[in-house]
Amino acid sequence: MAIITKIEEQKNKKRVNIFVDDAFFCGLNKETAVVFRLKTNKEVDEKTLKETVFDSEVKSATEKGVDYIGSRMHSRKELYDKLVKKGYDKQVILKALEKLEEYHYVDDGLFAKQFIEQNKKYSTKMLENKLKQKGISSDIISENLGSDDENLDLELCKKYAQKYAKSKDLKADGAVQKMYASLARKGFSFDVIKKACKAEIDGFEDEDNFLD
Image 1: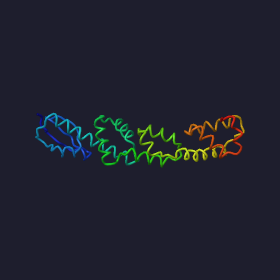
Image 2: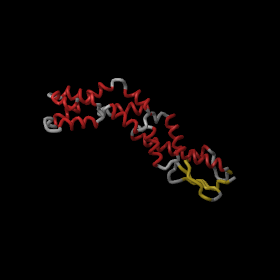
Image 3: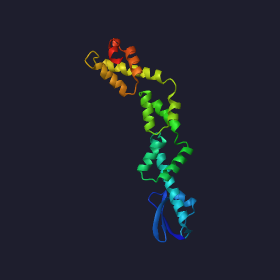
Image 4: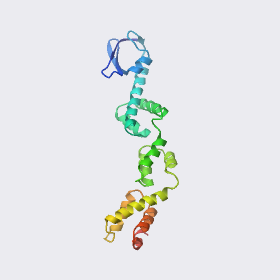
């Protein structure tokens, strides 16, 4: 058994320093110290000390996660990656994320819905790729992208095609190919690009030999 010989408040008044057997042991979240009823001259075993450190780290990681969410909504993966960079242990991070999900601060379904709503400038494929990069599951992506994706993509692609056509001379050598490539980089499919260009650009039918 060890003995807590001193507990002192840090400059950050939410935390305290714990001294065991007259030697500095660790810094703890003050709430953790209260929950575990730590006090000077109290005997503690190694298991209890490990539990207090873990609990304190979880509270710290949870608070850091809330700070990140305060600036904008994050996916579970985004928060995980940021907490890893802050140096938190994997098990600490998983427990903190579990708590954040319980509080509904982390909700990948809601995140996907809001992301799609706020990024209507992207094609369906581009949205899907970006959501996957943020760790959103295929099931959640499918649930939130809906069943009218091609029609939405067509309308969006028409806008981009019209904008491109107004700024470029499509009669110039390679202009149509460049427009097609530009639209493809935005994630639109071959069929959607062809339909959009035919619908929005006068004389585009003359370029069928390129697209067919």
